[in-house]
Length: 212
Image 1 (tube, rainbow, N blue to C red):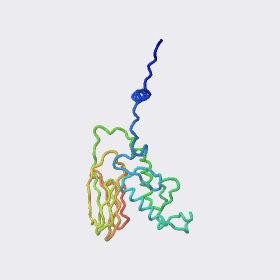
Image 2: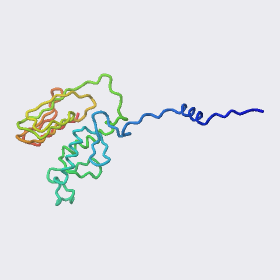
Image 3: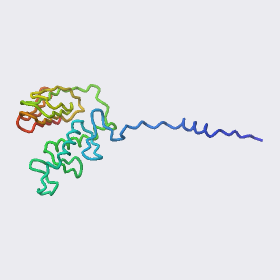
Image 4: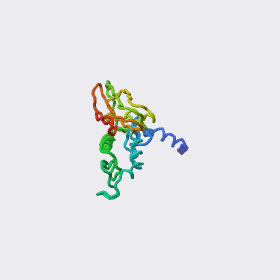
């Protein structure tokens, strides 16, 4: 009479587990994980477009000023913008009123959305060349803030004139200087490899933007 050997269930399960390939490690926030140096814009809940921290801060400030920049008697009812302002259009239905240059920068961020997520990054070039960027705040006086993109925010009380140099790689496609005046009059200028790519004279809204 043949006897049958029974394998304990626990041993069988362990053997099966050993043959099962380990799952691929997921990114912390799934397919919307931003590459280093970028964060979600959060113009509204679910807005996971990856932008610089300075742009996210500016977006939050725009949301806070949304009512102040509207003209309820305009052609589009309560969502009408005051003269000189347009809808931001960060997403379908985004009617926060901003200046035209901010809307242009927002559209540029949307266009770059996929390239700023971890899962869509191409391998870096073997010999990527860095470029030198000079950010300047011209004029005189003091500021509530200076936002440099890339570079972050400088504190209240920073005096003009001011300058800061940084090196950027080929992954950077947008440069910005945003100045909020406290006293005096400021302008801005952006220079890339000794070539001026954006400039606003003192006395105007000091917001310089350059697309590379």
